[in-house]
Image (cartoon, rainbow, N blue to C red):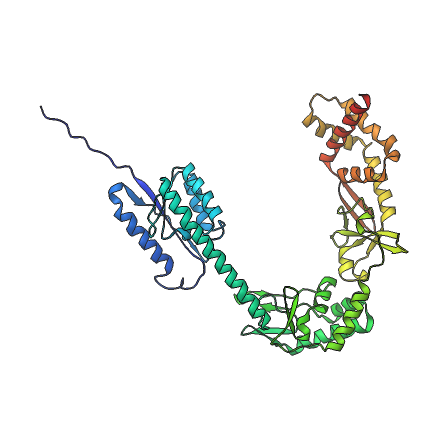
Length: 452
């Protein structure tokens, strides 16, 4: 009697090759470093063909991405395919191609183990399914992270040494200079604009007046083109930009690194005498006029008021006399950055606006439309609460409103008001629907505590 032959079918192992290079140097070559990594990985997969290994057709290449982060397009696509069950093994040329961070690689290994996916390094042969492989992995990864941190320290040291020598290390060039061969070169036309800004501020001492004149004459922030060829148009100069120009020591021939000034290699634009005069005025403007902390001044509508003409937030501010708040108001941010001439409603008296909003809110809480919205919102969370009970809770708020402390009134306004748009023609108040439900819930809890 002849015995039947049994054949053993080797299970297929779908292998994904992952490649990465930190910089884009050499990637324009016909056979680039990513191709070299991939070819070595494919050769290793071919050597394991008897074990059922086979490469997946998709490529997972991350050119120009650091190994210190997991936010890489190809890596994220690979993780998605692993979650979808399309990959059984991840193959990389070296361990640090996948990650240079011990914490990040630990997360990757957890994902691999959860999906029964193994990881193989071609030049550092180990398998993550064994305890020895995981030990080897942690040792190699610790060295990879050490190398990355050492490289970062060397870059920081080089940057610091270059700044101390006055070398320009990149970034947005200041108005008045162009960048050539990593050095600041004076732009004559813009340099005269910078001198004009310093002279006008020294003469009038008013940032608002200087900004108005700059806008009238068409002087803007620096327009420049990046090394990648992207053109960045200069914006109109507002107060913050004006003070950045006036406080930039590059104009007196210095560079700053970690709050320490060093002589630069570039030519100064501003004379030291003019610089000192301008900074004397700035120091005078910044001198504190009050001993009271700014946070003690109440502004219940802070963050809620918008200018209906400019579409920007109106920030709370105030004036003081003898340490006491003399006048509170909400100021249009556009008017604050430029001048009051730019907005038909530059400032609004705070007390008058808050009284008006308070009256409007109390009136809206009695309107049928708002009551209906409150009922719908409350019954989503508590279907058993009846309409009459909800209406009764809302009605209880009005009689006790005047007895509430100002801080409590402020808190309720924050809860109820979603947005407030103020214009010359009036104000547009929008209530927060979720706040109506929260208000009823709070009033219910207060009543239950009082009854207890």
